[in-house]
Length: 58
Image (cartoon, rainbow, N blue to C red; front, side, top):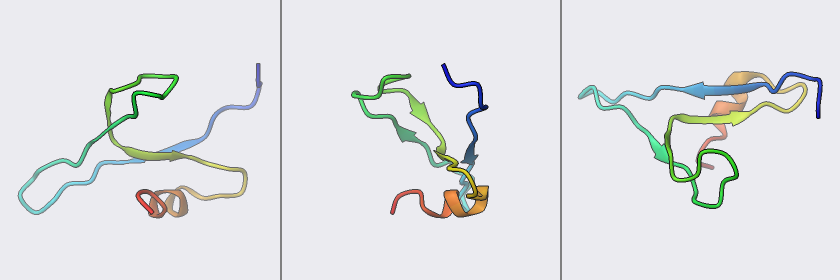
């Protein structure tokens, strides 16, 4: 089991009407399949959170 902490970033995205963007996790995910979640990504070493969040959905 890894001893390093898992680094990740997440964002709450709200539109002008106050609606919150969420996404459903894939049914093939090993953890929390089909669960609703906020946008986010794991951070590779040397990657800053803002850069990881910009890549969501690309």
